[in-house]
Picture 1 (cartoon, rainbow, N blue to C red):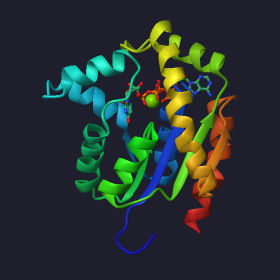
Picture 2 (tube, rainbow, N blue to C red; picture 1 turned 135 degrees about the horizontal axis):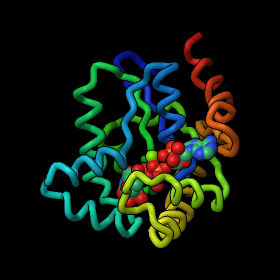
Picture 3 (cartoon, rainbow, N blue to C red; picture 1 turned 90 degrees about the vertical axis):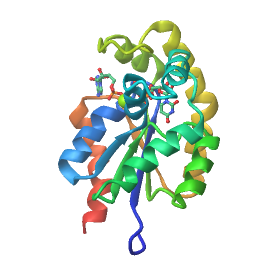
Picture 4 (cartoon, rainbow, N blue to C red; picture 1 turned 90 degrees about the horizontal axis):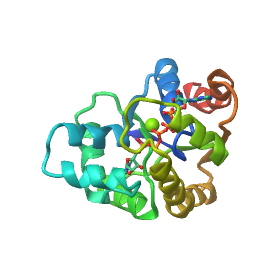
Length: 190
Ligand code: UP5
Ligand code: MG
């Protein structure tokens, strides 16, 4: 990256594809700053902010929170971080998200990871997670999968065309999957 510019990785994949799990391993090994858009939004709900109830209702329906809100949260985290290598998990979820981020942050990702996982495996993982997430029920998972296909796949396609996409087979053990991820970051360590 050019001097002073952040190093940005977007981590994409459907609900339960293993984004958060693999991000934890990337952070441990390569020391990037993990920013989960979903976690930031859930923190907003918990903190009773002005957007809290709107965000809660949006997540409950498996829909996408307005770009301005999510980009503002990401921007705040990025600007206050002394680590300039970011692992942005679960964002952008639509072309509109992507364009808003690129315009407001005046930055594009260096790397885009796509955890490619069959739907039935994603459903199984989400429904057995048991962490009390309001969107981890069969009805909302179906909706999340539909929104992923309709709105997130075009973003993945966009970055594939730009030569930035790394498609990872997200079936297997956590360690087997990480072995596909490792060389992508190792290449930047050299
Ligand atoms: N697990 C992980 N890896 C496994 C493996 N290899 N084998 C077997 N099990 C495995 O994993 C899910 C579960 O599977 C866990 O129990 C894990 O142990 C197990 P996880 O790593 O949590 O998968 P992840 O892809 O992170 O799943 P998550 O449910 O978090 O994905 P979503 O994209 O659905 O959730 P997110 O938090 O990003 O977004 C939630 C909602 O917030 C969205 O639906 C949307 O409404 C809203 N949102 C926005 O509006 N805008 C945004 O920018 C972001 C979110
Ligand atoms: Mg997650």
